[in-house]
Image 1: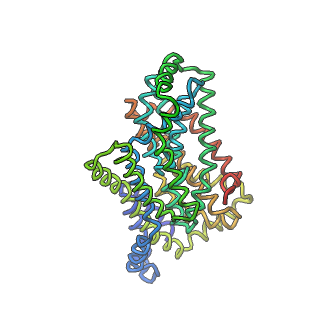
Image 2: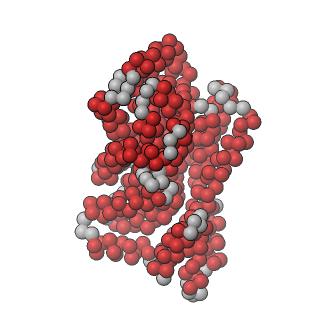
Amino acid sequence: MITVLLWAFIIILFLGVPLAVASGIVTIIPSLIDPTFPGSGEYVIRAIFSGADSTPILAVPLFMLSGALMTSGGISKRLFDVFAYIAGTKTGGMPCAVVLTCLFFGSICGSGPATTAAVASMTLPVLLKLGYDRAWSCTIVATAGGLGIIIPPSANFVVYGLVTKTSIGDLFIAGIIPGILIAICIMVYVYLYCKFKGGEDKEKIAANYADLKKRGFGRVCLDSFWALLSPVIILGSIYSGVATPTEAAVISVFYALIVALFTYKTMTYKEIIPVLRDAVTSCAPICLILAIATAFGQVLTMLHVPYMLNEFIMSNFSSKTGVMLMFCAIIFIMGMFMDCAPAQVILAPMLLPTLVELGVDPVHFGIVLTVGMAIGFVTPPFGLNLFVAAPYVKLPPTALYKPTLPFILVFIVAWMLITFIPELSLFWI
């Protein structure tokens, strides 16, 4: 039965059937093969509606909507100005400012591709104007854009929390240090690249800094105040216990609307409907997948798949380190071909029981899984962030594959540190 399900799932996906539909088909196959199977068609339908009838699931579309509003409101440009001013004329300063912009915008947006799009549109023209290599500049934004799903509030932490019944608030807290660590690793590489390979036009950088300096640091910070305050309000409401993650998502939407419409006045009322439409288009498939995943997970449990996987791993791997490395390899390969949220829905319920038995904290594994999937955003052959960023520099995504490789290696080094030093994730828990 399990072999039939596996091959059916692979074939259906290979035929180009959407993941939600593929998951639904595979979920009802056992009852079609064996009419006595407990997971009947009626049971599956009830489980899908039960999965959709969840308050925490609302956080996913709401955080995505908030990110879309922030993007339309030009928040990333104001954040970039602050970090560009701080960077000044230092070696690698401007590319590092891009990384920091992605880090902070991710704390508002909660999405990797959305962070990449927002930051790329505002920062890549500046980097190109300053003489940085076109492909290299693009890969910086694409790689750092992955921080959007690691630094809280992350929509993908919400997805993981829903499918594994793990505290979303704990996941948010646990993502802070790993996100900062990854940003530091990327910036170290950027500095060393600029230091030893050059590629910077110091005269142009000095002229750009002079323009910022004319405005004054106080003016730049004042212009960016409401953008910088956003993560403080969103995350502060969660960590202080004032609001749940879902309620904080609602706060973030209204905050984004107020700032964009009345404070910065970078959005008009006519632009709200298109933003809402785009947000619904983006989040609807994820919410449908989450609902179907509830039924899919219950059917897998009835078939004893987690138990059999656990038995296979325990009989073939003798150490926790070996198991973690194997799972990281699975996550890395899955991330090359599949978007983060669907991969989490499939992998988390199957892998977590074995890891819990080995003493791995569910929160820690949530961070490891999400960071691994973030690497997939820039890993060929697909690399969603590469496809998002490439049009801003008028290059085909394939032209970014080679300059992306060092960034992938840096990301993997940070990932291994996060994987084998659990305290980096669990320090505040």
